[in-house]
Structures are given as structure tokens and as C-alpha cells.
Image (cartoon, rainbow, N blue to C red; front, top):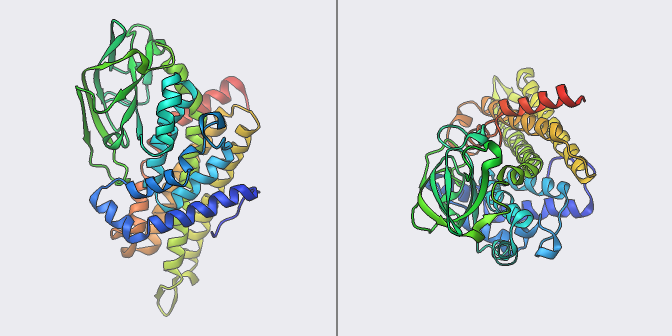
Length: 384
């Protein structure tokens, strides 16, 4: 790999190098191209990750996991995203967004029966929060779950839910007490094959191998054991996962930055204009300087935050900064990479796909605007 290791341990270097070799074998450029054109989920690559034990990475050993550190996870996700953003989304929707709720907050059935199925690659998951009326103000969701004996009856609509179309179970945020604001929200584990569940893939700009979806819930019956944690604790259960989510989104963007710089450099060093290599022109050289500065900055923030989390800190402001900078820099780096390559970059291919893939970064997982609100609140109320 052409990038520095930031003091990675031998184990972390092994994670990085193994994942890149494994995924480059399973997802060569021509296969990525075919999957993207077909908007097909990277099923074979995901299955290989399961067979090689990588789906167990973040979970505690007592649940069959590998007890990875935050930095281990950042190294892993950066390497995965370097190869293909779509497989990164496939991994995160199941292992992080869904599986971590089972591991941290699930009941005995979820932890002892469902989680082993997930680790083995036999259970795919997604998480459903955003709705047509908005996604940033989660306390105002309209999806409702009404008590019916020991069960709950779920009705409502979710939108932009990544990989719901391939998921077996979806963690759904719903209001169980409409008048209690964020304290009236619960998390329900919904079987996608249950009566009343209608999932419709959407036509996104990028991430074509991990599509977003609309989901309609029409009086879907959810049993008592399918409530994650306690009724009304949904908000409280979601908040502790935000630092990990933002760290890994930053790591993924850093990995994509690395790939864009590499692709643009390989092209530019062979391209000639006006009798010399285009890299000899200062205008092109300065673009590479800007791209590399952004890439290094994204990585520095990512691994700094990982170290803080591993030290037991709660770096809310720092994870928001890392997520915002890395995703915005990813988009800027992809844009400059396309500009360097000109018409060749604008044609559908690796750079164009990486540009489209990068565009969701400042939107998903908490928009850049929301992240700036988080950062400002931390500065103004807690100091720096």
C-alpha cells in the first residue's frame, strides 16, 4: 500500500494487508464494474468476509467475536473502502449498524441465536431511522408501534435505508409513546419477511452495490422478544454507537481518498500534453499536493479519534470533526482527481464511481450541517 501506517501494530498491519489482498482478489475492477452496472449486492465478497471470520471483528469474545479495538476497526474499514465503497457499506449495515445493537443491547435470544448467525454470514441486517419528512431530527419520526398484548403493531414509512433489500432483519426506530419526544422512541427488530413489510430499492447516484430503499410498514406485528432493550429506550440505545459510526465513516472516506490519489497519479504520470508529462505542469502538481494534504488530514483525524476511543475517552466533538473533514475532503479529492483526468475521468469508470460514491459522505450518517451543530455545541457549552 502507498500510505503510511500511523504507528499501526503488527496485528493492524496484518489486518490492512490481508483485507486488501482478499478483497482485491474477490473484487477485481472488472467485477466491480459488472456489479455496479447491475446494481447488485457484493454477495460473494461478503460471504468470503464471513468465511474468513471478519464479521466477528468488533464483538466481544464471549459472544464469539474478536474483541477488536477502535483502531483495529478503523484500519479494517479504511482498507475495505480502499478496494470498494460498496463492500464497506455492506459490512457496516450488517455488522455495525445492526449487529452492534444485538451485541450491546439485545436480549438472550438476539445475542445467543441471532448474532452467531450474523457472524457466520447467514443473517444480514440494516437499520431504519430516516423518514420522508426528515432524517436529522430523529425525535420527530412518525413511524408508530402500538401495543397489542405482548406484541406491537408497527405502521409507517422509512426511506434511504441502505441494504434493506437484502436484509433478513432490520432495526427500526419507532415511536411507542408519541407524546414523549425522544423518550418515547423504541428499537424494534423487524423480520423483513413479515406480513405488511414492503421494501423497494431506490435509484441512487452512487454506492450502486449497496442500494438505499424505501420501506413501508402496514400493521406489521412485532413480538415482545423483538424489542431491543427496554421500550422507550431507543434514543438512549442509539447514542453510544455514534462515536463508532462517525469514526468508521471517516476511515472509509480516508480509504477512498487514498484510492483516488493512486488512480489519478497512475493516469497522470503516463499522460502527455504539449510535449511533456502533465505532472510536470505546476497546475497539476498543485492539485496532487492539495489531494495529498486532504488525505493525510483525514487520516490523522481518523486515527487520532480511534486512539482517543481506545483510551476510554468520549470524543463527541472529535468524532464529529473527523467525520465531517474526512467525508468533505473525500468529495473534494474525488473532484480534483476527475479534473486531472479530464474526459477520461468523466466517463463511467473507477474515478467517476468514486466521485459518485463520495457524494453521500457529507449527507449520510449525520449531515455536515448537523455535525457542525454538534461541534459548535461542544465548543460553546463544554469548552475545547
